[in-house]
Length: 112
Length: 114
Image 1: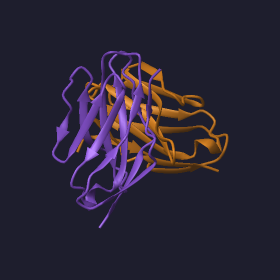
Image 2: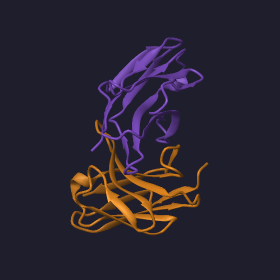
Image 3: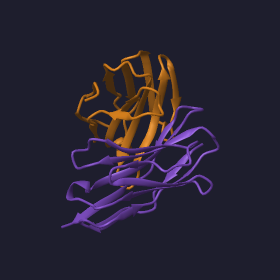
Image 4: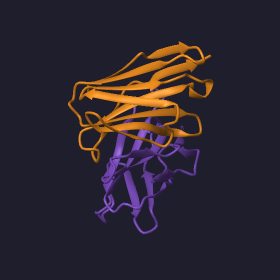
């Protein structure tokens, strides 16, 4: 299995609080992605990274920010959590982008 | 901008029969790659098949094959001799070599009837 872990795996937080999700890889893959999965919407891209300190927005980036200060870690921050951000979040990594992407186990986030 | 559309939320197939899942996409790029991923109830994402856009030949992996129609921007997945273990949600995905974006569709849930 590809070395990719997400933390935490589950989190309940209150509206208005900041939340940071971590994606850690041991594969030295260049590309890292954050998605949210919601029923009826599939996987929607939030932000992605194509190298250290190189990031870009996906289709649902509002209310989210990311940072990648080293190859192995890609952090997703919800600046002020809202109930609409309740979701399952997946991180994915890819060596060359056009090859297989490997996914973390997912983080179930509930905003109350 | 690139989009991936899966218009079939659910499909049902009898065991040993064939089912075809539809996927259409839109991109202005010429260098891109297409994928089908499977997500069983465990939520683990598994690569099913991959297609390079510059190749005309349709990709095949055992019982899984694609029908890649580049001009129509269509990328359907055919599952032959369906098995109970094929029951899962299937996602179509597009990677653009220009901006490194990996986009997914909304998914199709496949149910296999014994």
